[in-house]
Image 1 (cartoon, helix red, strand yellow):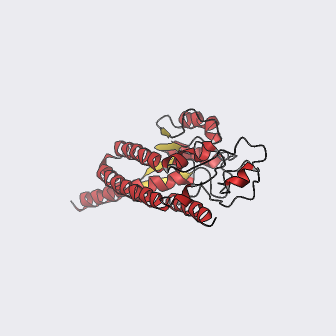
Image 2: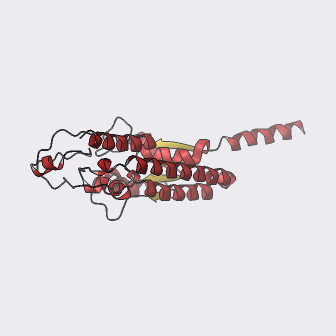
Image 3: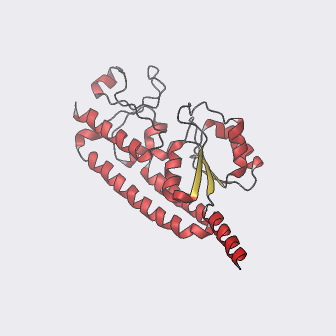
Length: 249
């Protein structure tokens, strides 16, 4: 009897240690998965923080890890256009959530810069986690609801920042990158990506319209790491910097 009890206890410990292995292409999605999955998920980020997300290619160790993934979340990174099919060939049971917009002609699809898009994507992530890990389905559902409340609060905070008319005048670098953010929060914008003098970067330029007319593109006032894992912090830093630059004019 004692042996049976010990075996059952060992099995219960093993069950509690089970984690759903989730691969994400970039760090912001690790933040989202962590919010929903908590301690019930193990997250692997393909593009390390110190690497260029526009040119990165998975290394051999990462490719080997693919076979253990239950879920992979794609963002439209360049390497995914070459490797996503290979990932599925390596692991036929892999569930892929591809959040790349269609069509997406830029190096990335930047849907994580939209709070509304993140809310929709979070629901899909939670749904898939519940299917794979029925035991913890209620935990995923509860975490999702909590996260959606946090997203509503974040959107409200950003909207309150831009309630000042002075904060709503901005010039963006590339409409493909910042289009969702600009539309979501009703900001004035101008797409500089077609200008020959405009540096091909993902920084936001906050410059007076008279400088815009004179094609005087000074150094960017705002540089934000949109690939940072602290997604919420990045969104607030971006918002506060836009408002600060315009209110200073």
